[in-house]
Image 1 (cartoon, rainbow, N blue to C red):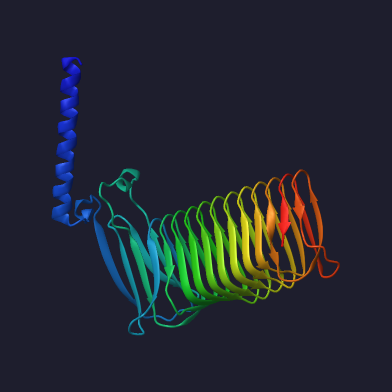
Image 2 (tube, rainbow, N blue to C red):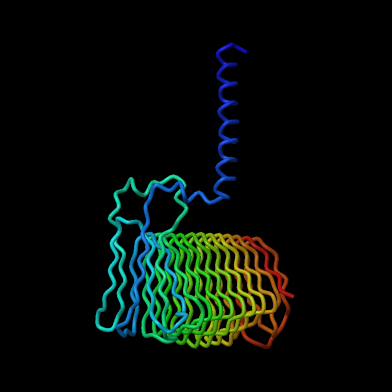
Length: 341
């Protein structure tokens, strides 16, 4: 090895070693909290809202939004944000409007060790309100336990959305690259959920209306749900998984390359399932009628009641019960096999 290469190699190893030592010292001094090195200066604003209101609207760019119950029956607003931002809180025909405007230059968004997220924390004194609307660019949205709303609209560009133990007449959630997690909800009419690359997770959800969920590359997971209306799911490359679900009005699910997997899913209405290259699995499921189709994926499972199977496959095998009673189960595949026990 040439002398110049040896010198360069030794220099690189020394620099790497120095970086490791310096990183270890910084970690020990800060105990893992690097926020003290942030180049962004923050301010904290605290405001008690004394005027009455029936609805809430929040708009911000990169702030995390937290809706929580008030500890003392007063309405309290806390905003932690960079000093160059402006914060307004006003009323518009019974609606509390909170807006944080980002006046930072583009280069001010580049901050080494900037682990502190801007925050909007709204503590609400009442349990019930008319409308809740939150729109943020890249922040997450969290709605704490115990609230009732007529209508909820939650939108975030790249943040996550979380809500639990909430009652709403209508619920609309849109997260572009973030995930949506909803637990222990009661929705009377419409629930519409949309995510691009994030997952959608629903658990212990009851609805007297219809539920629609759409993802691109994310996954849809539903567990323990009772729906009086219809359920409609659409996924491009992500899987759709339902467990312990009852939907009286019917279920439709479509996917491109993702798999559809149902376990203990029952509907009195029709069940319409289709994929391009993904497989379809139904374990202990049932419906009034079933219409299932895949291009290259297989179809298999077990139904709870007898069905009249009408099957067609291009090159796959077919193994289904022979029954002349019950609803119709139509299955068509291009090259995938069909097997029901």
